[in-house]
Length: 238
Image (cartoon, rainbow, N blue to C red; front, side):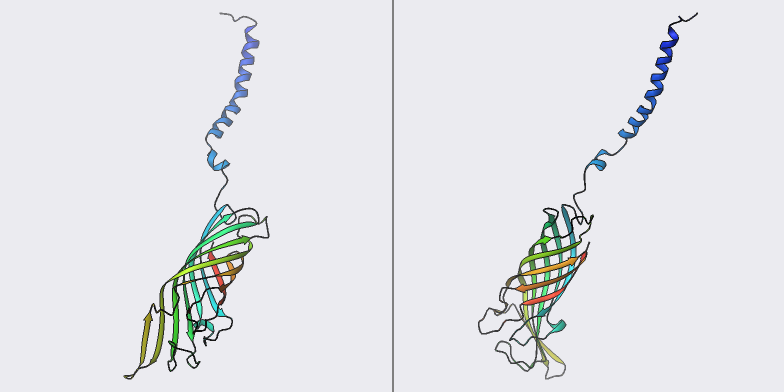
């Protein structure tokens, strides 16, 4: 059987159309196999994203004047363990909220005169506060183009907390030898609530922190206050 003469031009056009459609079909097949959600949705969490949460540990020493006769150095300090959630408000501004455990202690110098209930003649005297604290801070980041990192920052903060356990501990020589330790739990002369303001300057995981307590730890007007200022270092797990 012989094909008409005008059949061959049409057959050639059909073959060319099939060959041209083959790459497009392969490209369409690859596109359909990609994860569209992964490619198009920007990440919302990370050090410089909208939300970022991390844990941290802080340690600060008591500073500033006090008529209570407080020992300086490690004897009067605060340890903190907590978590922080950051909500970015703009390229230079963020809001932080913290929840943490804090242990604040003041060692009293044994040879300093002070009114009752803190007496004299003890080898050591310590007042301690185990606290649950909350904090809010406003963060300023000077550098906008820093990638997905925390970068340098300045925090203006305010905090408050409840001392779920307070104690006054004394140690002195025992008549039978050794040391006699006496602990007064939840005494009335140690405040259960406290709060203050502060400043945090940091870069990445490290920060210098200063906090000033506005509330009284010893509510009685006959008792002088321990130092209100705490200066220390904070390390975050980023």
